[in-house]
Length: 328
Image (cartoon, rainbow, N blue to C red; front, top):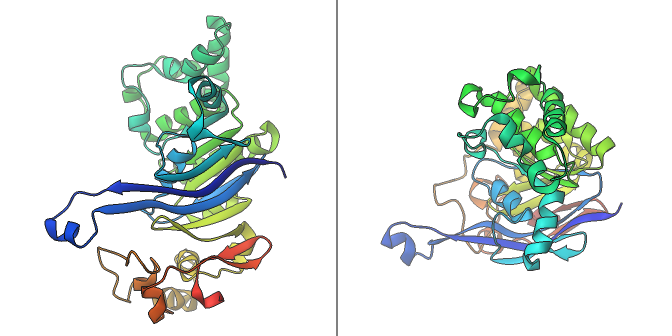
């Protein structure tokens, strides 16, 4: 499979305001993304799974250069996007899109739905007539289940529900048929009946339309359904990655097991297993030692060195790796 996106040792550190005690304790920096490395191939969907606050959205924004990194590289078709000049970035914007997590913030409240969705066409398809733009926008809105499109095109975002706005955001991201889409919790505001439909349409776009996805979610079931490969993300680190079925059927990292076992099932024994890996090992608000494993305070298998040394990446198989001393 041809490489489309290559992420190499990517870091993003934010300053954090807080008490003098926190700053003296060297906690004034937050590593939102810490040494992430992975690849995305053409027509491939890679799911990123992790709890809220783990840095998934920051990772997604770095991949489309909505944020600048502290260090590291993101290469799109072999070119480091953080070294691109204005003209190259304009070209990149056509090929790379992001579906933002919050549709209330991502749509201009003063623009009609048509104005928002057609904006990419105004920039990159200037030769299109008004009628042609209306036809394209209508097609994409109806593709997202907003039918008939005429009832939605000239409404303001405030006249739509959160789920409808989310579908508008998906339509806008897809309208240029980009090669790569970062989808950040793209169906979180949709009813369950609509989620499967939207996810199927994104999979079809990848399969038939040639788009690759980074699919960001906290829901491991959706990640399994969507992803050819899966990254397990915890507090800025990729703790496990591999082909989706390898990760699901043979999870190695304790955090991956926690995510899988937290999926509700009508089985008391599974429930007991989940409780045994729950937050019963001294987890606190500060979370982790900067020099140790970030999951140490929650891990039922924690060892002394886990608290003092960041575990390296161990290869389980050709398509499966984990960052955990249990596999040394």
